[in-house]
Length: 274
Image 1 (cartoon, rainbow, N blue to C red):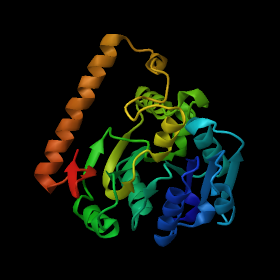
Image 2 (tube, helix red, strand yellow):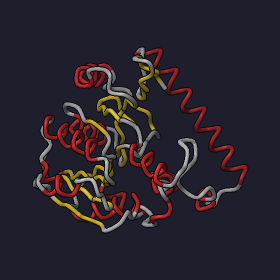
Image 3 (tube, one colour):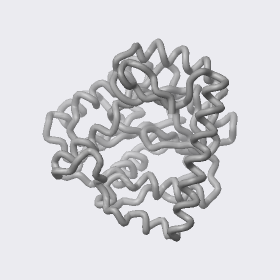
Image 4 (cartoon, one colour):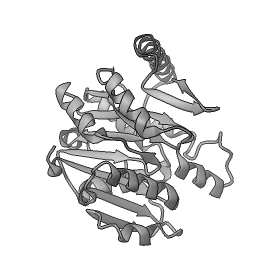
């Protein structure tokens, strides 16, 4: 894959240890950091100095936390490519994750694609696991599936539906709105078993909740953000039921065929397949 075919961007807000692990895993697996743009949302823990030492393709330092939507847009626009990977900073990548991700998208005429992932504590050999899983589940595809932990977006999508909502107070609802617009436009998306990540699990949002005195169960964003979708109560309920039904079908089908699924959670030293 040509280096100018892709760009990678993520936002960060403190949590330097996770950002360092993310960058280290990229370097380990051959990612050219000149193709990476990081947007810092006002970190105060040494993250900015660390990022400045890396020789990134782009480094944007916001004075305050402008939220994911603004930061993702800044990163996507700073280094434009055929494919832009928007991801979290609390993830580890694996061998051939990017090549497999883009190749699967192109083979299946997809414009948005997300990798499979395991979430939770890193108490297993992720590199070994991902190497085996990406071969075993290379053909596994959840058509219509996607998540904002990591998604590769074809540049045609920006022209079709625009970028993320640049509203800081959305506080994590930006991905829901983006996916909603993609669905309305009929943009093909999927989640693939050919590419795997480990995701520690929303560490930035957890830290922001602590700053605001919120419990883990409380949401960061306004409870009425759903109104932005302009859907009736009945439509929201029917869509939720359809999503749950589809998720159960994916789970049962993958588990029967592969003995695992495209989404795992580490609990008590074991994989809990979702």
